Image 1 (cartoon, rainbow, N blue to C red):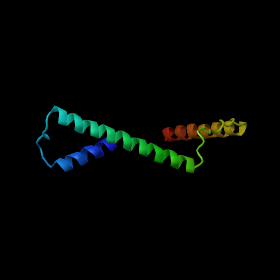
Image 2 (tube, helix red, strand yellow):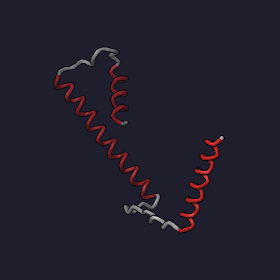
Image 3 (cartoon, helix red, strand yellow):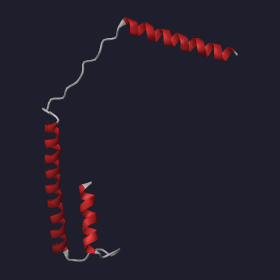
Image 4 (spheres, rainbow, N blue to C red):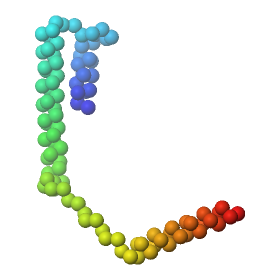
Length: 96
């Protein structure tokens, strides 16, 4: 995401069009190094913003999960009743 923005900004500043931006190997190395450095700084700043937002929402680093609820006998009976109804409806539908 950030790298794409940086590439678009560089292309807009160069204004060369379809041609490849000029410069020798050393110049291209400087430009690529600047892009990578800028990308690292932006990524670090973004991670700090995200971390601060998580802290503002009471993030402690611990993942909270709910325990798996036990299956009650009433749930089993209800499921069996629904399957029975479904099978009965299919049998009646194919009979007519």
